[in-house]
Length: 261
Length: 43
Image 1 (cartoon, each protein chain N blue to C red):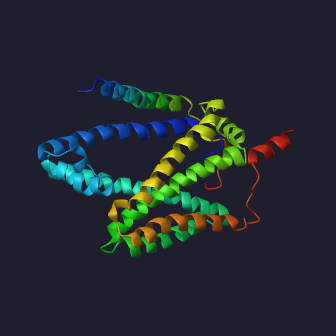
Image 2 (cartoon, one colour; image 1 turned 180 degrees about the horizontal axis):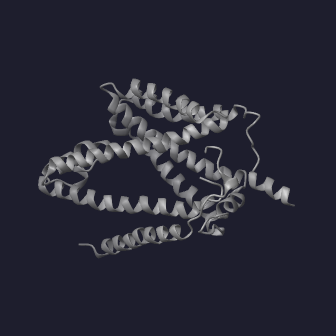
C-alpha cells in the first residue's frame, strides 16, 4: 500500500463485502437449519450451534441430505480450508508487521520469528485429542476479550487519550474517496466504543455467570482467562521495549509540512 | 409470517448489497497509481 492509496474507498468495499456475504450466508444457514429442525420436529435453537459445531456437525448433516452431497461436501470443506488459510495469513500478518516495525527486522526474519513459535504452540495444544476443546476455548476468549478489547482500547486511547483522530482523518482523506468528517470522529470516539463495550460487558457477564460450553473450570482458567490475560500482559511488555534507533517515530506527513513551511 | 421481519430483511439487503455495488463503483472510479517517490520500503 502506498501512501496515498484510497483507504476509505477500499475500507468501504471490504466492510460491505463482508457484511453482504454474511447476510447471504445467514439466509442460507438459517434456511438449512430451519429445514433440519422441521424435519426432526425440534426447535431451531436445538439444531443451531455456533462455530465448530455448525461447521463439523450442522453442515455435514445438511450437505449429506442434499442432492450430489458428496460433491457439495468436497466444495464446502475445500472452501473452508481456503477460508482458514486466508484468515491465517490476514491474522498472522498483523503480528509479523508489528514485530517488523518494532525490531526493524527483515520480512523473512520477522515472518520466521512469528510463525515458528506460533506453529510450535499450535502443534502442542491443538493436535492432541483434547485439541478441539482447547481450540474452542482459546478461540472464544481471544475473540471475546482479546480482539474486542484491543479495538475498544485503541479507539478510546486515540480519540480521548492522544486526541489524534483529526490527524488520522487527514491521513485517510489524503487520497481517500470518501471524506471523513465529524461523523467519522463521532463514530470512532463515541458510537463504536459504546457498542463494543456493551458487547464486551455482556460477554464478560455471561462467561462469569456460566462456564463457557460447560467446560471444566481449570480448562477455562488456563486456556480461556489465562490466554486472554497473557495476551494483555504480553502487549504491555512488548510496548515497554525500546524502539530501535533507526525507526522513525514521527509523523511523516507533519515532517513534510514542516519542510514545506 | 411476520411482515416486519421481511421488511427488515429487504432493507438490510438493499443497504448491504446496494452499498457494496456503490462502494465497488466508487473505488473503481478513484483508481490511482503509486507515485515513484512513494514506493514502500517493502518493495
